Image (cartoon, rainbow, N blue to C red; front, top):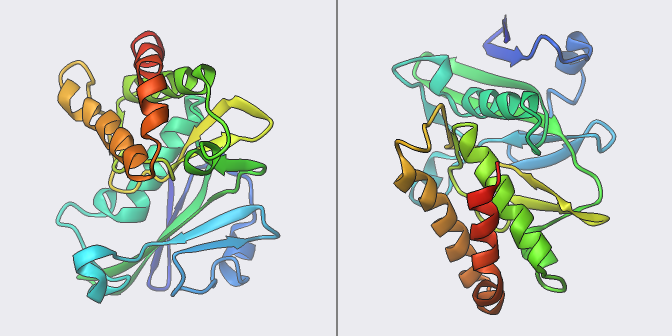
Length: 228
């Protein structure tokens, strides 16, 4: 990982990423609107994610307390590291391009991340409105199993964080690894990994896909047990 300081920012990216760093820094790609959580940038090739608090901590906006253990535990660096690891292990997720942290003082930071944008994909939530079959759920189970066997626990596995390629439903991508964990032994922590499946099921129930679950959940679990 390459880490550089630019004024009050800490910038990081993988050494294998091919892009013009100076161009990224000095053009609007880097200076994109900070009040927006998600933006499509760079001629719709990239997605910029600016970390903004939700829920009870909304009043803090995009401000985060600098962690005691430094860079590794900041929001964008942690997600970049997980995405980079998964991408290099040929797991279906978005490729991280560059991330950065802005420090107004040593105690507070703001975080951003840029990833490659998928084309012709749809969320699992939207896909299930019109299509559902055994193959889809079986492949989804295999994909989740593969993620767990790579030692990654997803921080919020729901129907909006799973993308289906419209032309090929066997191509399933899992995204948004904020608040996720890496280096988890799935055999030592089976309860933690099974909570990912429980969260996904809860998400589908909330969206009204109970009939699909009754019909295909066992197929998903079969794919999970045999996949990876």
